[in-house]
Amino acid sequence: MAQINKCIGFTHTIEKGDTLYLLGKKYKVRVSALIFANPYLDIYNLQVGDQICIPKYPPLS
Image (cartoon, rainbow, N blue to C red; front, side):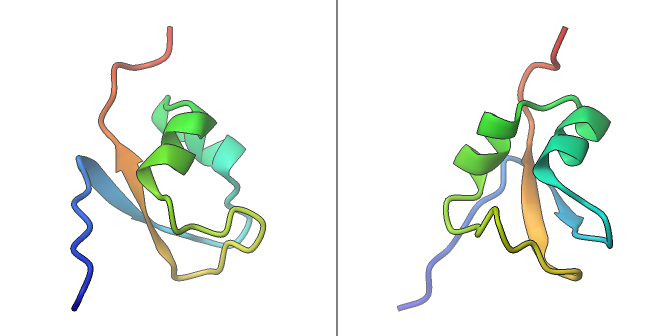
């Protein structure tokens, strides 16, 4: 049975140099929100070309 993941927000394709911290700053989302929205993501092994969900939450102030 295939797992259906719904991203409430949009997807981002990992590029060279991307980190969750930098993506959080770029999209104004907390790192914890990125981790929560991507439960199967290996945060220590981001690969170029991987797609992650950037959740649509209230922006950081």
